[in-house]
Image 1 (tube, rainbow, N blue to C red):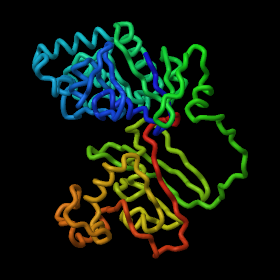
Image 2 (cartoon, rainbow, N blue to C red):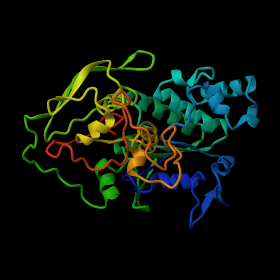
Image 3 (tube, rainbow, N blue to C red):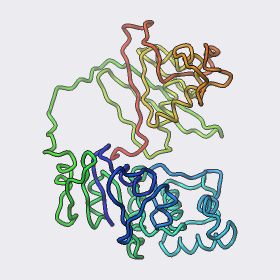
Image 4 (tube, rainbow, N blue to C red):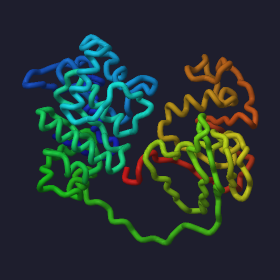
Amino acid sequence: MHAIVGENGAGKSTLMKTLYGMHRPDEGQIRVKGVEVRFHSPSDAIKHGIGMVHQHFMLADNLTVLENVVLGAERRHGIGNKARERIRSLSAQYGLGVDPDRLMEDLGVGDRQRVEILKVLYRGAETIILDEPTAVLVPQEVDELFDNLRELKREGLTVIFISHKLDEVLSVADDITVIRRGTTVATADPRTTTARELATLMVGGELPVPELRESTVTDHVVLSLDGITVLSAEGRPVVDDVSVNIRRGEIVGIAGVEGNGQSELIEAIMGMRRLSSGRILLEEEDITTWSTLRIREAGVGYIPRTGTATACCWSRRCGRTASWVTRPRRPACAAPGSTGRGPARTPSASSPSTTSAPPASTSSPTRSRAVTSRSSSSAGR
């Protein structure tokens, strides 16, 4: 098992996407079993036994495990009992514990990742690339994943493990390559290397020592959440009676495994979701029923984790985007009914709206500003 480590933006994922045929190299060679190959697409890489499990899973929730696995590979074993038996055989061989008849939306994050691994095994992969595989897993799921990876290795498969969690890398890797700014700077033996030595190689110098400074936190509460409850479409509480006071000069972290209500809580603060109960106060003013646009103009900013998807969602819900930006033709994710050539309909107070590029607010020049951002994984991410 070979690990590739580096800072965010060091080029780890780009390098692996090149190996998987998603990018074409400008220079250099790729050799598989000693033979030079050229990949023009992921299908070329798959034909040479290379598979990749991406950090963000590519699975359809409304399909079964079997349907997700065989999608695009129907010619191998069909879509019926022969495919089902092959999936069960691979699952048993590598200790994945995957049921081909389970509906994907009923599976947890760890099970979904095993389905992704099974997908590449089903297509005949002998080299498996895992891009940040532990980013969305809790510790127990990480241990289970590493057991699966060791089983793959015992069966003669090659695993390339991309991560910046150095303790995990040291516990599972046989060899380590360190990348900095797109260049290989070192190789390391996990048996004789420490996490601090790897970190020094990753950043190109000694790690800074945190300085003890006077606290910036005051007693003034800027944003107050009082008994916030948000329901899902099925009526299930996804945020249940949450109360938080955020003071001026304070950084408040919200930690948890993805899917435990972090995004819904932030969307409720931004007026993108209705509250079932509770209230939100900004500088002691009740903003519970305010629209997203009004909340943004009051000085609350939102930096989403997945900017592209969120921007498209926002532009559908925002009625005033076109009045701020003139476009020659309708954008792909424009608001329904909008041509993109003139002002769209004005949002009502009951229809939250927002935009990715609002004008500077002049209505509340003295209001303190709060910025909300979320992390969808545990605090170690």
